[in-house]
Amino acid sequence: MIRRLYDRTLELAAGRRAPQALAAVAFIESSVFPIPPDVLLMPMVLADRARAFRFALICTIASALGGALGYAIGYFLFETLGRFVLDLYGGAEHWFGEFERRFNEWGFWWVTFAGFTPFPYKVITITSGVTRLDFIVFMLASTLSRGARFFLVAALLWRFGPPIRAFVEKRLAMLSFLFFALLFGSFLLVRYVF
Image (cartoon, rainbow, N blue to C red):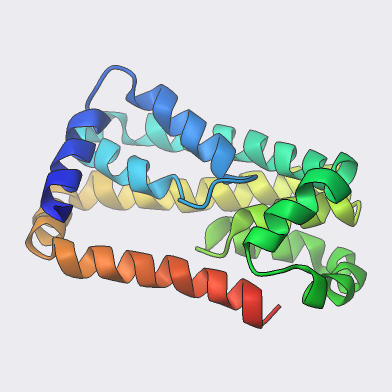
């Protein structure tokens, strides 16, 4: 099943509408969607290495704009929508109050950390709006960290594409397990540490 899904994703990644799908996923992942855009970015780069950096740019711009939507949810709609989204990631009530008090002091670094790592970025985008983190600081940190992440992925796949593709295809089940373990672990981190 994983193999068929992988092959289908590669097929779709080479399709005409793939850049629009990548932009849509990158945009909504930054505010509400749980699956990171890397899931599309990586097969797209593997399918068409010549457009690797174009795909990374699309991902960066869409993700930063989606982050602005997350910021707006926190800023304008926290009680009606933002709290609901944060509760999906582990019940914000038990940690949010203390986190909010300290957030602005280290806001640039929190956004940078969440933008570059598998940490659920939407938690930080919404929190940035709730705490009224300076919007320019937020957008700068978002664009830099998301860009660094997506361009790093694109550069590695562009440079080492065939060997990486062979490695992925040979160990697809193990890598899928690791990906979902990492994703699940980041949700647990939000729920139990913060």
